[in-house]
Amino acid sequence: MNWEWITRNRGLFGGLLTEHIYLAMTPVCYGLLVSLVLGVACARWLRLYPPVLAATSFLYALPRSC
Image 1 (cartoon, rainbow, N blue to C red):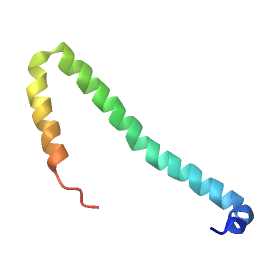
Image 2: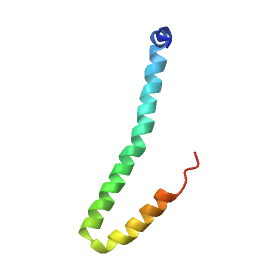
Image 3: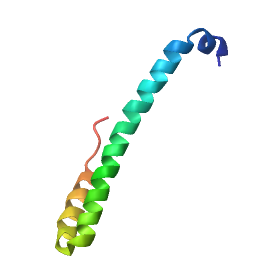
Image 4: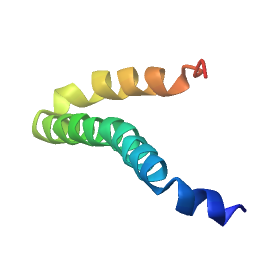
C-alpha cells in the first residue's frame, strides 16, 4: 500500500472518509429506528404482527438491483 499518498492527501482522505461514514450510517440509523418502532408496535398490538411479518418477509425476499 502506498502510505505516501495518504500522508500527502490527508485532507482529501479525511473528507472522503467522513462522507463515507455519513453515507453508511444514515440508512443504518433509519433502519434501526423503523425496526424498533415496528417491534414495539407488534409487541403491543399482537394483531399487527402477522401483516408486518408478511410485509418484511416479502421485502427481504426481493432481489437487490445492485
